[in-house]
Image (tube, rainbow, N blue to C red):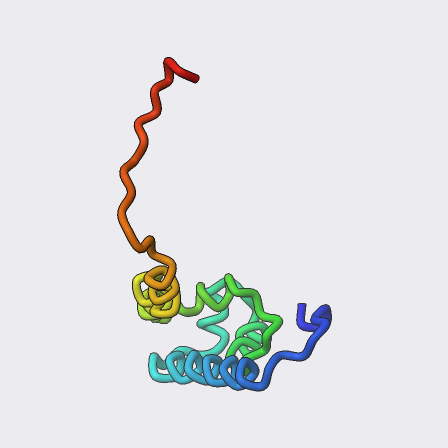
Length: 112
């Protein structure tokens, strides 16, 4: 719940939530769906959907993902967060890669 937060959201995150919510609203309107219709399809109340569209950080992640799925927008989000697209992690892995190959030791279970 947003009321349980100890620290306020960073401004960039608050802005991103608003932008994402507006994007969901635009997608809904472009599909000629009312808020009530979309809310029914994702299994939430209309006020909850409107909170999602306003970027309220207290809306459950499951609600957000279900809305993406119903609007046929889930795949691009999944692709955006896939490990293959994580350039920072790839760079860190390359940085910590072994400098040389080592021969693997065969474990002889008879000598344990």
